[in-house]
Length: 426
Ligand SMILES: [Zn+2]
Image (cartoon, rainbow, N blue to C red):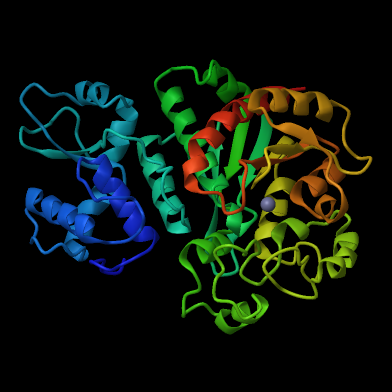
C-alpha cells in the first residue's frame, strides 16, 4: 500500500477513517479525504501504539493498522487464562481461536504471551467504498475467524483478479448467489459478504438468523456465493482509471473521451457488459445494440463478440455447469424489483417462489422486456436448466447507489437469502 498523508484521497483513506472511528478515534467525516482531523487521529493512534508520531501512514503505521483491519488484535495472556475462556469472552468457537493462532499449544500457555483475538466488531465493513482489495482482505479475515467457510476461486478477471467463491453448508440442495456483474452496482458485493459474515457468526454461536434454523440449512443445503463477478469494473468505478491499466487509451476512447468512469461504467475492463454476454438470445441482444447507439465496447450494453467471450462470464457459466444449482439469485441495483421470467422457459414454481421473495423483501415482481430480457445470467440459467433464476435489483435511485443505503438494502434481502435454500428444496 502506498503512503497516505494529509491531502491523500480515495478508498484506502476511507477504509482507514472508518477503522479509526471503530477503534475509538475521531477522523472527522468518513469521506476518503485525508484532512487535518484524520491526521490528528493518526497521530493519536501512533502515540498510543509506540509509533513515530508524524501523522503519516507509512509502512510501520500501516502494519499496526493492518492488524485491526484484518479483524484481529493482540491479547496478553494473564494468570488463569485458558483458550476456551478467551474464546468465550470473544464469542468465537475454540476452533476459530485456534485457527487465528496457528502453532499455539493450548496446554502450555505462558503468562505474558501475545495471541491473536478478534477485534470486538464485525469484519465486513458496510459503510465504505467496497473495492476488490477490501473484499479480499475481508474474505481472508472471515476465513480466519470462521474456518468452516470454504473459499474457492472460480476463475480470473481480464486483469487477473481472482473471482472468489464462498461456500456455506454441506447439504445436497445447492443454490448460487452472485453480485456485481455490473461495475456501478458494487453495493451488491458487501451485501453478499455481510450475509456470509452474519450467517457464519450466528451458525458458529448456534443461533438462528432472522428466525431461520441455520443448522437445518447447513445440513440440507449448500449456498455458493460469488460476491464480485466484475472486480475490474468495480475498481474502475471506485478508483478511477489508473495509468498502469493496459487498456488505458482504449478505455478513454470507449468512454467517449471522458475520464470519469465512476458514474457510467457497468462493463468489464474490455467494455463488454457481462450481463449481456450469456448464451440466451444473445443474437437478439446483439441486434438490439444499435437501437441504443451501441456499436462496440463501452460503458454498458455491449454484448461482446460472442457468448461467454469474457473470462468473468465464462467463469460464472463454468461454475454453474460444474454444480447442480436448484435456484440462483443474481444481485444488481437498482429498482427494488425482482425479475423472474425468461421467455416461455420459466419453470412453473418460479412465480410462487418469486412471490415469497417479494413478500419478504417488499420488492415487486416484474417481467423484463426488450434488451434487458436477453443474454443475462438468469436468462441463461432458466433457459439451460428450466429452474428458478432471479435478477434482484436492490435499492432505489441512480447507480452507483450511495453506501448510505446499505442498511436498508441488507434488511430487505437477508430474509430472501435465507429463504432461497429452503424454497429450492424439491
Ligand atoms: Zn445490473
